[in-house]
Length: 622
Image (tube, rainbow, N blue to C red; front, side):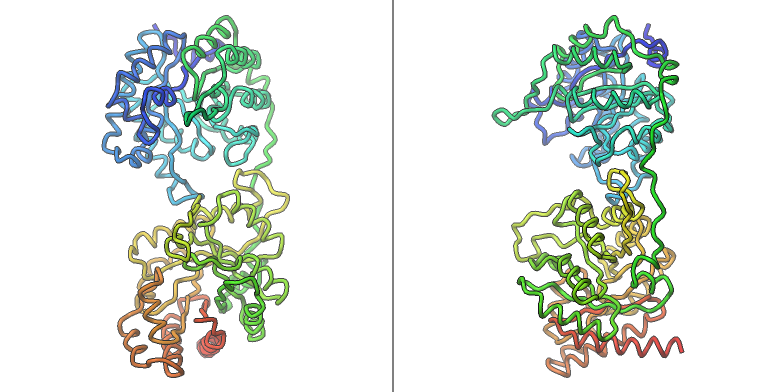
């Protein structure tokens, strides 16, 4: 007769989990470009044998081979239609090996995709995916659940929410940490204790990524603050590459030593992750066989409140972040002009153009970040030069293509410290569209994730929810395309950008006022001020290029015909100016301002648009 997991915890008896599954399947020839969870169907004998070996080694709990069997991860392999079979077979194989004495834990890993605010997947979608997977595991009879290798407490929260919709069985929830004892987002686990303890879980743990030494060091802190039982599930050390294979070098004796140390600390659940084999588990069984962990009552008495340092602060009001933000907040019509960074290292001519815009009363200059994936002077450096040398407020377009999440945060913190005030968060054009199609892209996050990062910095927290000495105060802009090919997707993404913290949006150049109005009606409920992009076409050649070679731009045939008839030279520029002003006049009462492009660097053409729009605004508000 099995003793329940909760009864074992109550008794204070140390509980031994099994060891690695993924690395052992790899050793049997299952390559990493395959779904290890699908092996439940393709090679069930492999999985069954691994479970039996851990049972024979003395494990109290074996985990199902379902770590990556959620809908997100299975979809990556085209296996989403096999979700139920994979999870059900995973439980069957584990139960068969466990027999009547050993408990079976349903293993659930992280979602495997970017979740808000770092990506477009919502918490509700994550919750639904875990509810779906947990429902199968619960129906097939697992005794408990283990959440493994999570990087974010927020994703643990949604997994717990999903499980609790279908089961009241015990839950072990584990975060993973790096060599510095922090989560992969840079948070010290001790500061996540209050959030984790608030969840309906039974055990808080650390697993994977590092060996026993690092996990032990962190456990020494957690044991003093956590009132719930703790789990320590380290790798067999850090892997070393030998002839192209990752080899884990921790001996069973070394793992045995740390099992004793974990037990002495009062850790209740001990096990092994990547690289651990039956020999390691047998040695750990030997180490803890006659020991005793803290009982639940003892732990509750020992724990003291953790110092909660990661509480967000109030963001600076938009009207105090920048002059641009103030004007938008107060309902003043705003004007910006887009100036592309030079291709060389001499910004003299570009700064002269910016000075001309300032003298003409333009509110801000927009500086794009590698437009069409072209290689130009750093837009951030040009923006700082404009702010410092010309005293012109800038709106820096910042894209995700070229930086990882750490570089993004560093840039944003440094840019704010140096004087930048406004950011337009954009995903960025793929490198294949630009000058160097073989260049690689990063895209750790997209524009939605970037918006969320900036919003968090504005609340005084870094990407790991660690407190900053001072919050940033960026006015956050996002892009919007009223003529997107997939309108439904564009609206969905804009809704996410609004939720992530957008203060205003700037559209692609508007060449079709009617389409803009139809689209605006569908997003007006979000309440995000819209700055309309305006591009005064300089010639038919310019129009033809824009319509056919610039992503996200669609020019109506009627407009193309007018530009074709106008030809080139002054008549073409006058026609392009007239078209731009006609479109603005139609949409004027729906927009908060204009962002005017300067085709071929012709600032005079952009200023002519600004003068025409000012006259309209004055007339409309007279």
